[in-house]
Amino acid sequence: MENQTHERLLIIDFGSQVTQLIARRLRELSVYCEIHPYQSVDDAFLADFAPKAVILSGGPDSVTREGSPRAPQSLFDLGMPVLGICYGQQTMMTQLGGKVVSGEGTAEFGRAYVTPEGSLDLLEGWFEDDKEQVWMSHGDHVSEIAPGFEVFGTSPNAPFAITADVSRQFYAVQFHPEVHHTPNGSKLYENFIKLAGFTGDWTMGAYREQAIEAIRQQVGDKKVICALSGGVDSSVAAALLHEAIGSQLTCVFVDHGLLRLNEAEEVLSMFRDHMNLQVIHAEEQELFLGELEGQSDPETKRKIIGKLFIDVFQKYANEIEGAEFLAQGTLYPDVIESVSFSGGPSVTIKSHHNVGGLPEKMGLKLVEPLRELFKDEVRALGVELGLPASFIGRHPFPGPGLAIRCPGEITREKLEILRKADAVYIDQIRKHGLYDEIWQAFVAILPVRTVGVMGDGRTYDYACALRAVTSVDGMTADYYPFSHEFLGETATRIINEVQGINRVTYDITSKPPGTIEWE
Ligand code: XMP
Image (cartoon, rainbow, N blue to C red; front, side):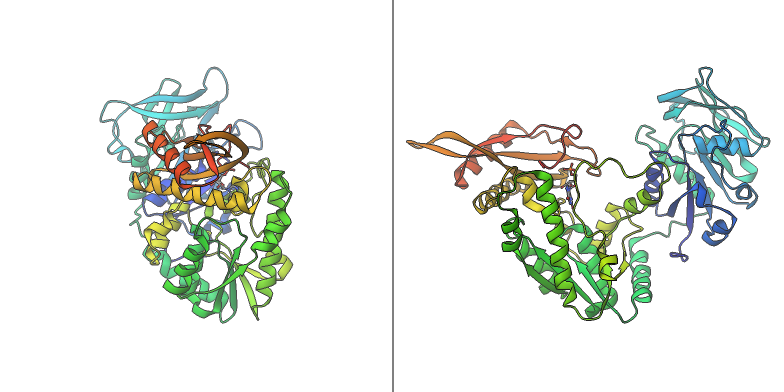
């Protein structure tokens, strides 16, 4: 198992929607942790993983149901600290001899307030205002605590909101300390890891050394190819691989003609000149734009681009003799999703474009050096590897590029106009110091021409929409509340500086119900 050199915490997942947030809170505290579904955690797993402490997550089931999930019973005999959260608390109580009941008005959903009873080391820094706001989400509750436990906090519907068996370092809370709505929740995790003896040895510097070693071990003297998009994930993966195996790495940068102004030059100069990587520039603009001609259906456009991307990548990769590995910038959230037992992949809203399926098709093995990291950790690693902060902090850019910002039919003329308008818009955002506050900002060129008047003449040009959103992970988003002054100034600049646009609108749709991109 990887990362044996770090102190490790194990999160046993019972299927809560917010288990990932527990991992986030712990990583923020420099503690290495992994989430594993309860079915895969048995005695052998525990011995192999060798955690220093264990957290039992929440979950949708009821411990009162026969056959409902349990932690391995042996966990409680290993002498290590355990923290049970919500469902985790309830199974812990049940397994240690307490009782949980369903129904009878025991449910609590949403904000609640916990008041203290006695003092507990886990609660250091809590209850400075007599009570703490917490987030509850439970139908069942503990009606009888297990032998050895004492109560340290109660809420109106959870008489055993916080309990502990101090001598065994078993802690149990009914609420979710990992969510935003438990404002002081991080403090509770901080206290828990302190009590468990963690020193906080999970730093990017340490990770970098260890990841490099792991890549060298996996790859040996073989060659690796990597699809470099210029986005944060593939860029950091490429930089890390380059540091580990130098010239054994070749990157392929597929230029589909749907990039932003100067994007290809910037990415190539960064990686070839500045970082000395071997990068093949696959100039396939004609191929992509040719195949897209006359297509206006969003899914068709995406499918064409996705298929061509794979064909092109494969063509160039085949020319790299002796390549045995394909590098991918897979992140931890993707890994967790794929093992989660609580539900399959959600409904496909749009076909996202990636190189899935390629490794099997080409007989390549995968190297995924970022698969233990969250997005912000990837950014920190990028900075650690010497990528400029301005490059690492760039807004995400989708694989299909400008194709999905050009609703309807794509033409070279529209793409040219769109590139220019987008560059002016981003320049405006940077000049006003707003770039880092915004998750993503871009222009979409609309399949509509409108009448205008400029000077003494009539114009009949394209309308465009400006989009800017704030988001934590791209899953949900709010439109950015620009001032009218900013919007007015930007519209004037775009209309004056970009020939072909005579009307500017601002998209004020949040996600949901909208998506971030227009297609
Ligand atoms: P939506 O439009 O689905 O976008 O709200 C959410 C985030 O995903 C990006 N996006 C993509 N990224 N390939 C990608 O690599 C794609 O096909 C794709 N479609 C959307 C989008 O830019 C936003 O950050």
